[in-house]
Image (tube, rainbow, N blue to C red; front, side, top):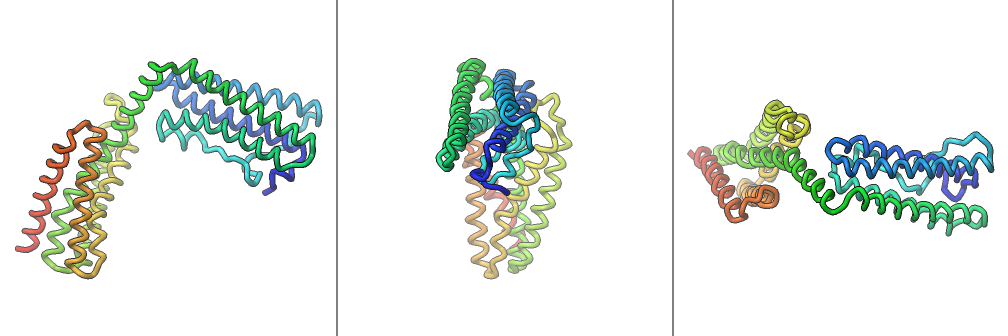
Length: 318
């Protein structure tokens, strides 16, 4: 891997060309992925991709004039210290606002990198070239902002953000909450029943581990098979199933792990504290995303958890 300062002007232009191609491709991927659900933002990225292609064309014209028709392949990954780009498929699941912010960050990073690189070289022509590229990226950042304002006035942005929030709740929060509630509450009885029946922390841990994994697999498949998401708009079934299953396992494992502690009463006290944290987390999610009054959410969750916990202790102690 080479250092940026080791590149000559020919290689710098080649790197700039490949970088513009990559950025244009990222914007194009965003536009394609968002065109159905967020058409205004998709149009914004279509225009930004066109801007990148125009920059690439100008760079190619400059390269051809100065160095000929053959452009060496030099990519960001080949240069130490160059700003790396995350592919669109990694950013898209984070939400629509994260996608917009990523686009703004792409332009800011490129402009900042060119400015810093210009200050690290001594050749006048190279410094001038890097300065020109920095100015171009700064102008592109401003142009990107103008495109965003044109395509995303306040009411359009609000509608798209509301749609993204609903999508996030339906695809992630709801199945995750169902899994967390099932894992946190339903595994209380077997874990504490095993603990109080045997007073053996390792046995309690094994029961809790088996119950958590079994419940996670069951809940994951149940969620994935219950609804294909086409009519309900709840998203892809595999994603919901994965989220639900993972949160079910997490909910059960939380109060199971303390039983790795050898002392029975110490492990039980810690497990009880973890149970309280789990139930409070469930109540907070219900208040945050489901508009459930906080006192009502906490009371219902605590009551249900207390009943299941008491049942497990009573059964194990009998």
